[in-house]
Length: 617
Image (spheres, rainbow, N blue to C red):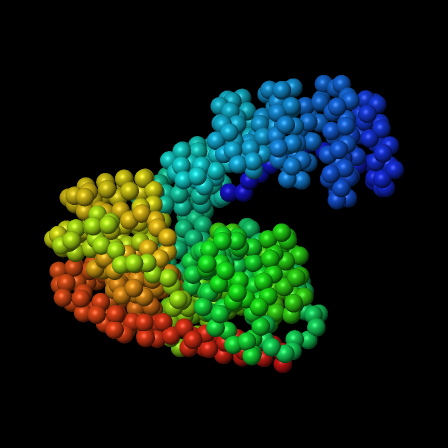
């Protein structure tokens, strides 16, 4: 859901404002108390259009201080809107409060006041202001929707999931046809493990719920590649501008010298993408390639962030640039291959790749599936994760590498080996685990896990502690299967070294489906923990299968839920067989094709060089 800010009533300027002397005359007229409100609005709007919003705000401030008018609350509102746009949020707060003091029923001002309070880091006060709008029965429906949707967004960010869902349901009951709201509703229920996820609301149909499902939520809801393509295409159609007639890379100087690889991402910090890609960035052959990053990633102060920055030849921050300017900057650097590490995930900027700042553009890691963006030509893949029969459902052409597509980091810092007692795990139990995020847990797979526990005596399931609603819903499902709640054991979120070390305490990892583990599966195998996975029809549902095949354990890959469940039960009841898998991983796992990062980097570079030279002619 996008935040929306109510716009002030604006009249069309009759005369353009030019020059400082004219501004002085306008300020003098405003100080005289003789300027009409319509003239004030005209002049301020013209200043704003000319890129002089600061002067427009000064004109409003002067007028308000010297003019007696029954419409002063409107001027205060407009003043607050300009101040908010200038990121002068504390001043904007005062402007809206003044508007409300003059007109307490001015709900638009209350809505905008909430946004300023949010910007000022006072979320509880922001929600309280929006709640006042919701409580006004006489307020227009659109104002109610604005308040409810922003409350839901902010409450979800603060992990107050139940309150957020109530707001979303109330909004959808007022107006069912809101795709932005539907996508948040569906994904929030996934996070809560609130099954079935597609819970009807008001007049919403099942079709509307399906069509409103976001790309990320669809990846976790079904392995049907046609539905995943549909979700991506709908996002592109609704949210991304049409590509320009002339790609931005055309007309640039002829590319020569080293091949320039540019990485586009907002996740080059402590994030799954940053964790996986750091050694790729470090190992690029500097004799042949020059590595750029065009990034809006935050500086989180972690050692990983420092490694990433050190591994990049030219780090170009674009967080303060609009998409068009950012695309022009990329084009001006003469990038041969632009690698989009974001896709359509949270924080993505798909409009940049749509402008085609590079002649060859590749999707990798961020979105394990099609993003349907017109500007993305290729996706890095292997023959397992993207078999031939999947290609018709991908808008990108595959760049096939010989072994596993997924890069990883062999320099992961691992903490001291813990004891089971440190995490409340029974010493003599068979420990199944799944440290994936709870939005990847589906009803069908969780029920399978409960049946597995029932068939493996003295076993427990070790899960990531994510949110209280997901935990309670999982416990209810355990109750329904006659599984004692004490057999669901929670793992707290911890720092990466401790997180890696504790994989050694589990016996077997149970993968999620259709959203397989990616980084988590790599971490588990690196630490010697075998995984049972279920590989389906989509790229994302085949990730762990690719990893297991390349680490040397293809027998742990299944292709139906029944076989997945049967294999997990067999292993749970045969700890000696599990021990042999662990022994194999300890002795051979890190020397397998899966973790031969230098070879994978060379394979990727070979393909990038081929594509770049084709473009250079």
